[in-house]
Length: 364
Image (cartoon, rainbow, N blue to C red; front, top):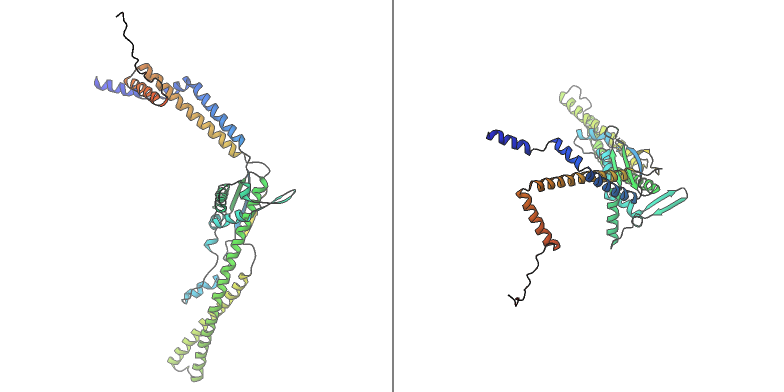
């Protein structure tokens, strides 16, 4: 009997789906009203926010190695020489994704301003003034502008294609396109300057190494020439033949390295002054014709979800309170006592009145 009773009690304590559905139907008005109110509040808030316009551009980085020393680095390393190389992994799409979010590029947008081209003409827009940022110092204003700019920029990279896509979202369509165009110009300039700087360093290295190889080649050729002058008939001597072959190999190696380094030196001189684009633009940033309604829709949807959650919570609390009141359990009585004490302490409700003294009745 005890086992059956405990099993029945445990079963009765469980909340079934039918009970939950019954509670929802009983408290449907609370849920509907809460959902409607929260949705309307979210809708009003969404309508008060300005429209947002998103401009998008996409480009493909040039993944080829631009350094002139790349063709000789493997050959030079076989003989114990170190040849620097430009380009490579740092020019991958992930590099440009990080570059677009870097502080150096964003500071260029904030400090230099934006030239916005409209059908009526071009205007110069200062982002700090456009965003109406108020701060005590110029550094604080720029820092707040950078933080806002980081929030309106999104960068993605295609895994299979390697295409970098940049999206800029502002409250004006032509401003969004202008910011995207300015970012594209900044990364192109940065990439071109760094590649030219690397090519200049490579040219200096190749020039010094080329002069050193020239001296080594001259020394090896002089040694071979001296050997041939001293040993005109060396074919019949195994030792002299071995010495001749060794000197000839030394000259051949130095000639190969000298020729390769000369080619690298000329290529580095070309790369030092090369100003060709290093990225291929696929889609130019254009002013969007329609605003982005996803932001407002997400706010309304969030209000709807919060309203449903609040309605269910209020329904559960109200249903549980009425059930506990009908059962008149000890826990409910304790809750009523604690609630009354809390109201008295916070709002002064139900505060006990001080006792009043009464004069004695002479008839008594």
